[in-house]
Image (cartoon, rainbow, N blue to C red; front, side):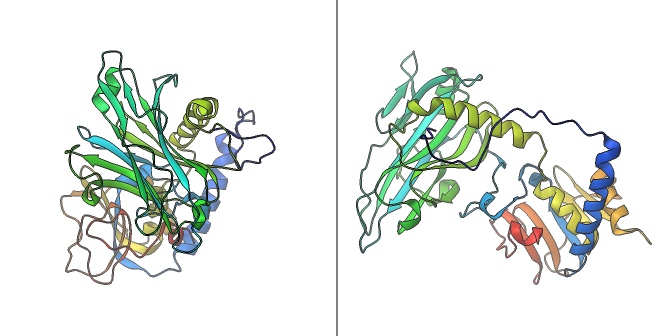
Length: 375
């Protein structure tokens, strides 16, 4: 994105030139922090059983309130979400001005396309509605440019991304950019959201709620919102949730390449390095402090049972090492006692009275947010 002169950003990018600390310095500090967290979490309600999903390893624990975007899926910044292959990707943007005093507002949806080395390949946007490869194959197509979102229906823009054709043309990364070109700030709109659909029927209804993979709210002031990068080769969505404030000139993908090709790979590398704790790490701390039996669900389900006299710290260390008592093919019964559940997908029926966090709700109605597990 393009940051105009005189504006202040909340992020700083520079090489890490700090001294690397030895393990003998780091490990006592980590143990002290873990011990304090275990002590605090032990004051929360206890459960006999806990269910944790391995998928939460790729979901970053939020490090402040801003890093969890208000959305249907509360996805903390830096998280990575697998995207099923073989479906058309339809990106969408919707906004509506208030009934009273809602002045015309022009939001624009653009998708910038880049190769393995983050070299610019092309764009699909309000100023280029179609992008084709050298062989003439359609890579991406915009449904058109709307410049006003009047009450009550508002306006919706779409961009279809054909992954097979894009990969054949040398595209690896697709960067979604939402630009508040003129009018009301995101925060003053009656509603505003964007997201991703995965479609089997490109010729069907433009918006099909059943196909929505991710939907997020637009908030903040005027400017540019860069929510995510789709890695087409690895079929992974990287949630970056980057905002740039201020009045913009020539603020489109092509004039923002220098910022996009710096910010996106740096943030993806930073969060992919594992330097930030994941929701899985946080879940293991809660499990060790509050539960007697822990089920870790991945390709197989492993069961960990607290041993006689085993402290929370020792139980936690064993959970981290993955030293299970026995593999299990079943998770706790839906008609059993309440459990503590921390799930990537809420695709199980939980006992009445359970306490649950779930990134994707499905059959689970969670009442725990990521921030609740941090407090």
